[in-house]
Length: 307
Image 1: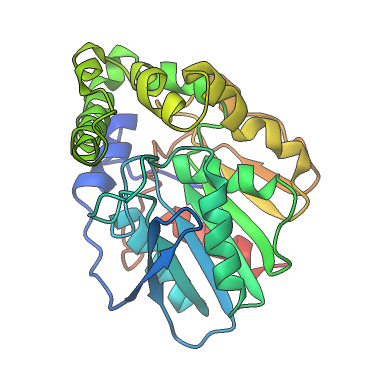
Image 2 (image 1 turned 180 degrees about the vertical axis):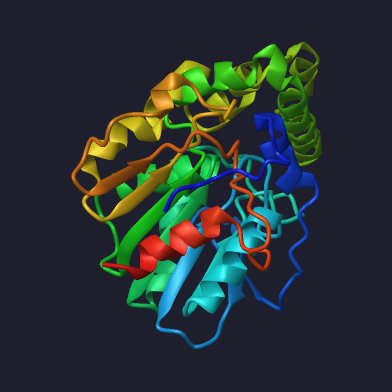
């Protein structure tokens, strides 16, 4: 199943920006559940339930949430293919600041594990889909020990498998608008959280110019890492790929400007299928005249529904 980008989207930035800003997916009714965490915090889960025996759990990207168009598009298509769907929000991403000091990050598989184990009490067949940061989270999770038996397959799109070099890639001049948008949102969350936790030094924000700066001053120390590089080294999914023991699909577009060359490895496990189409942008894979269904949605469900 080969991806061919529409001729209208002739540049990789157009392939990335169009679905983020111009795509509209009609919202569906869902049931929101607040799942309490062992450290007295919470995760907000959006359930789309049709009494199907199979479930897809979808993980969003950096500063995303469960209602972004790329999530809703995947929700819609999964429902048509006979799955129930759970789209979850990371800590602080559902519109309410979480109770603890910690945020979310690319390696926080303890929260994903909590969500999966919670869902496994109801479903014996669970597949995972992750985008960008959520793709890294998904692949790291799949390569860790202790998977619930209910987990069967995984799909990940636009994944910064090597966090350090990908962070440098997104900080290149050509990606300045994206990086600054992420930083604005992240800085705002630090300021809001500092109301609850005065020990969070917001004076450092003035000196933060890049995502690496943010991870050095906040993401790393807040989550128990020595700094940005320690965080990147320990949480990059690339090092977990050889341990993946279940069927997994990784799709990274070659023209994704957020990714470094290290994000296109040869398959390091017989269980991993890697696809690197020339086009697609970052979390793009737009296609027209398919009733609103994007190529990534067709590809993901094709993989999940075929043995």
